Image (cartoon, rainbow, N blue to C red):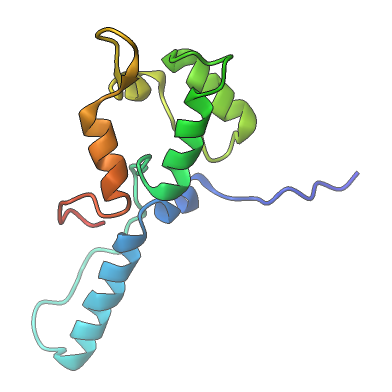
Length: 130
């Protein structure tokens, strides 16, 4: 039987969650074409390392998963549920990361910081490469 599942590398998933990074690279190259003199880049472009779990594509799936009765605001169960749903995309999601997003004081809910980051989506409010 032929495997028809898409082969997506870990680094390409990370790059997809950070679209501003690519835009910045294109902007830098365009600027370089207009005024080529100056310091030349000696280092090759590196792939992104960190996921942006709060981008629209990822956060919608995470938020919908937490509403599932089998998850019940458990970080471990949430990560397991998401990895069963899509093992390639959620391979890098750790239980400890999710624990930082859940406010357990009283009734469990998302922390204000997590909701704020989800509002920002792909624009995380810093200039560290997307």
